[in-house]
Image (cartoon, rainbow, N blue to C red; front, top):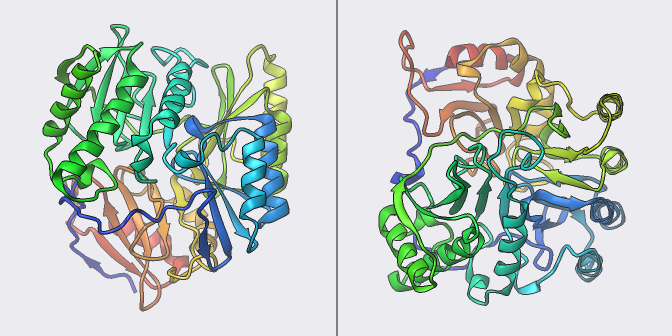
Length: 441
């Protein structure tokens, strides 16, 4: 049965209600594993998504030796290892430490940094943010105060193209055309203009201002949006902290951005591929490491950018063919670019359905139907919607009574001219997804 009913769009984070937590967040790391239905889970923070080939090989070895054999990407460009055996934590930590993937045990869960994955590889960025990335990670690991950040707090380093500016990071630093940078907190409409040289230090100072505001309010918050404080108030607090640290700044309007990653194919001096549902098999990951020239860059869109400086066009074409042959997406028109899913059954006890199997089985419907403005579909096994993308999307959420409920979610516009106002559709059989998509548009 397909039944249409009205459903209000979700409120943007700038209007979110303040949240007071009575505990620290339970985000897993590499030292604190999470018990899932398919075994223990480790989340390895990869600042900026940047891995050397040798580090990538260590992760593949850990996945095969200790886990389910697969490498799972998150929506922050981090890596998850699943199906880990009981008692493997010490062996995992030893391997990651030796590979340089665990530089500070006290900061391992707070090294959440995303960075423009094509920075320095094409002509669309205003500067290469790699120096920012290295400096911020070093400063973060040296800050005793930063250990109090939650495992959900996110830094974003945007090279000016605007690809990360809409990811709702807690602290966003964006390069500007005048050679400087903008520092913004949460979804605040105004930003602090700073020098590019001061950007990493200013980003850390802004995070410490968040901790100061949290302590002053007497409540515990995991993200900027959860503070009982207006965005501009936190920006002002961060500005005072910058002044105290001798960092010059000026308050201005914030530049807008978009949340979209590189399309698959040859892009600038790099190759870009997408992995369906963010899950690499061992052969796929191994082929990536063989094709990579020096490093890999994992993206927040569950893809990988492989820098190929000095590589001939014919070699790049041949490399893309090898990656396509192992099942990675190299076609910019693939419907996989618009489909995501949580882990679902059997990995998660809270999931009501095997969402990955259903998403795979219905992929043809996504490609065949020109649904609502080409929005991405995200399949979730329960109402928590773990790992869902930011921005407007179509949520496909498993229902307690069976089947799914489709709804348009996010801060985008409502129904356009001629729409009947329907925002939600019930779907009792995944094979009828095409009809459900047609009904919701």
